Image (cartoon, rainbow, N blue to C red):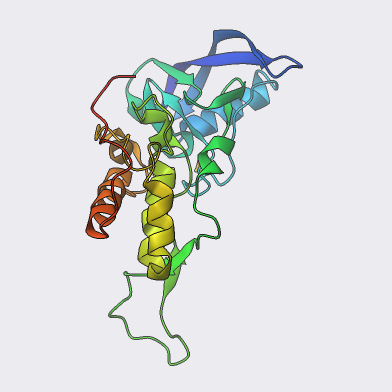
Length: 244
Ligand code: SF4
Ligand code: FES
């Protein structure tokens, strides 16, 4: 297996007792990687062998838990799905996701992501994959988890700077309407606000960065359409494109 010498330029910081971030800086670590190592693998080796104080979040190592989102050479990615050597650079810059409160180094607090999720939403839905398959007699239908892994990459990439529910929670509202149509009126009311479906500026960044194909922008467009179809008065003007 081929090996490659890389430099990881990692954004570091400390959090003081009052929860304020201090001393944001970059620190470089040299590491030999093989072609199979991901950026998360590299962070783990650096933490094990070079600096045990390095902080980052992760759990599953396979793109399911959504905890390892970060900026890797300026792009929002899951560290566990990003092969380090394949980036074809000598230095890999790693930073925490912007727009989320820092917890130190690469770790961020994902709590705000969940604040506006629909309450009591179901995370299981009917599977389309085996819709025509032959089912064992005792199986009524196939089910699977929703696509969203709550990684926050979409929220971090969104250029809307005003108060906004954000792409992940809005996509969750539309999924819940699809899963449970009986909640449609209640959920449309929740997103027909000046911080709900309307501030979206259609930049489409959310759909581009989503690692699991949720396409949040499509869900937001569907929510707006449903609001109009149901004769509700839009709570705000649609947002315009603007840069963060
Ligand atoms: S919609 Fe996609 S990018 Fe946004 S939180 Fe869910 S999985 Fe992550
Ligand atoms: S560690 Fe779970 S998605 Fe990366």
